[in-house]
Length: 408
Image 1 (tube, rainbow, N blue to C red):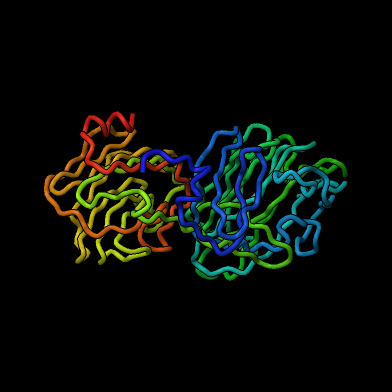
Image 2: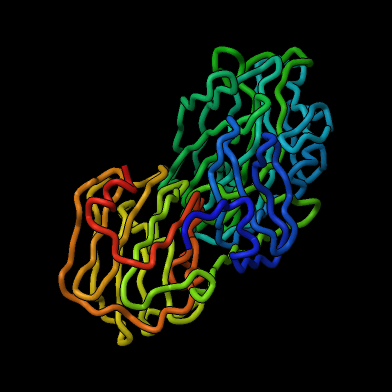
């Protein structure tokens, strides 16, 4: 296959997604891709991340941008709609403003129905104005259990983490998305008795106090609130009065398109997983006998394990592992480059973070291999939720020295 620029790979990749979806474009703005359109995503600084592959997620917050709507309950706080340019370049970011009052908490919230004993992630885009400290988190409907923290929108630092009641498996994230906006996120596992949860957005004064006397004019900008089932945030899913679902991405290339060699070959891939994998695993690539095959069909590939390590596996037509290797090192929230050489009785794996050559001198190659799946490990539940920056295929077994050079 050689090297293929992902920006022009649509002529090679078979891609489907049964919904529109968003991504951060090269111009620094959040853009919308229509159904069945791949997303090449960028960092806020303009560097390319790669082809974004995500599993299906639903935003359960209604009126994700229209926070002036009555679906959001306000306490000692008002909302000025469409007060600033949002991360998508449109004048749709709202301003939350502290009411003039004696010492009080200034916040807003929306109650959302959820499944008990399940992990959810809330996220919102925020930008400083007169205030720069955002108080953001998740509480149950009784406001007695959950987690929240202080997000500094000037420095991008999280502090003041608070756990209330029986909340567990708590994680906080903050990342710049350009034009002064940060995406702030909190993940929490709700308890066994909770049937609803409350994303809440609040203001803190410059000293980080939640209760203070408001001046009736100071505040900050917010946009794009989201609540999704899972332990990390995925791309923004807009809502306008009802929940909305982004369908899963599916990307594959038939091996007939790049001259696959059934006897020997080498795959070199650069990819990233954005957040910790807490259940099962997520695929980087799989060479399969048929599209979306189960492990009984025979195949090979690489995936992120739930332990935040990398796994490389080859299995035969009876579902038995021929090779199962785990290079040393944690790959959580980082970009990795992997070289995987395959030949009968002659396998080798090298990564950029562990230049040790892992070999196996016993094993048959599964055949026939008919499809290369990108960002998936066999089934839809094993989708990457990350980026494929590049993938190269060589129809021969490269030397161990070459593998190391390709991953340096």
